[in-house]
Image (cartoon, rainbow, N blue to C red; front, side, top):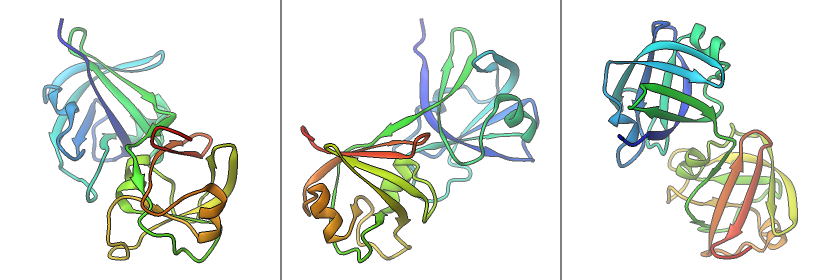
Length: 212
């Protein structure tokens, strides 16, 4: 039996994509496992009880917006409506079964990333969570000024997401807060943390490596 092919995608609604085609854009750094799906194969596209036959076009990095941890799935507006897919907001898990030629998509509620360290703690505003590009990209954080709930070890705080402007940060991974917020959560510069973001509840859980 051939193994399942699985990866994470962000949906893009694209009017140029035919209704009977889905386009897998393999943008993930280091190569996308989804590119193991045969390009041009006919398959059943499925989400829960909704199914239809499509042609899967799978290619590497045709329209990637900078460095990416995730891949993209381009679908027509009609397909997006039929399957209840949201444009550029949520992460979805895409799974292809080569034994049955079924491509299944499901909402990925929570995304957890590898540990990142605080490089420095010099944000002026106490309610700002400043994220470097790859951190935001990997977690699929919402746009600037979106309010999220940050939690760590029983403490929580409402904060506004802000992304580093291009060239603003000397590093691509990590996050910053004000010194007061860092003291509240027990963040120490140079330590490493695991971040887990629930894109439905917009709760960001932060814990130290191997602990709280």
